[in-house]
Length: 138
Image 1 (tube, rainbow, N blue to C red):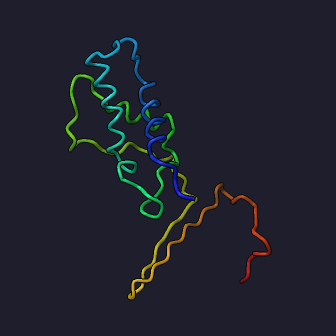
Image 2 (cartoon, one colour):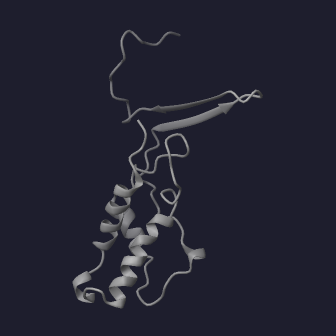
Image 3 (cartoon, rainbow, N blue to C red):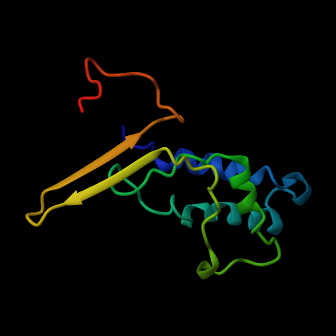
């Protein structure tokens, strides 16, 4: 299944970031409120969601992207007194929230034939579901 569109993930992330600020204190439309909202919107420029991702183009950034701690790591970088130059916009820290239980690899041969494989356990020991009669064939 391809990853969801990034728009919904961006909204969740931005709202999670904004939860770290008392927006009522700054007032609707104030310069401080706009600076905080702009800083929260920088999420669109951060890796991995800054990439225009499509299924098979890059790793899905969904895992961990909605965690409150991830949003806090970004909120802590927002300075309401100064706009951040784009050269300083860096990824927030998804780790340790990204799962290490999914592996993806791609292989391309000399003729340009390509195969991509994604293997996931979904939890430490997998889902426990086996498709049809497929079992260990070794």
